[in-house]
Image (cartoon, rainbow, N blue to C red; front, side, top):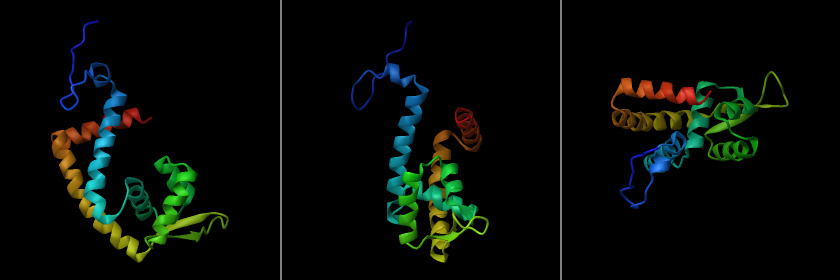
Length: 152
C-alpha cells in the first residue's frame, strides 16, 4: 500500500498514519475548537460543558438533573460539581420535581436567563466563523449530518 507522506508544518513529524484517521481528525478538531471556545468565552468565565448545560436548561426548564446529564452524555460524578458551580454563581437553581420529590428539576434564574442571552450572542459570532471556515451554510449542514451519522 503506497501512501502519501504528510509532514506536520509545526513539528516536522510524519503524521501520515494519523492524518488519515477519522478519530484523530475529530479529536484534533475538538481540541482546537475547544481552545477557540475558551479564548472567545474567557470573559464569561464559562466552559463548554457549562455552556451546554445552561442551553439545555434554557430550552427545557424544569427537567430533571439526570435528563440534562444524559442528553450531554455526562456522568453524575462530573455533572453534579458542574451544576453546583452554576448554582453558586446564581445562574440556575434546583427545585424539587413536581412529578418526583426525590429528584431535582433545573431552572435558570433571572441572572441565568440574561447570561444565556449574552453567551448566545457571542456564540452566534463564533458559529458564523466556523460556518465560514467550513465553506458556508450548505457545507455546515452537510458536515453536521456527517457528524450525526458517527454519533449513532
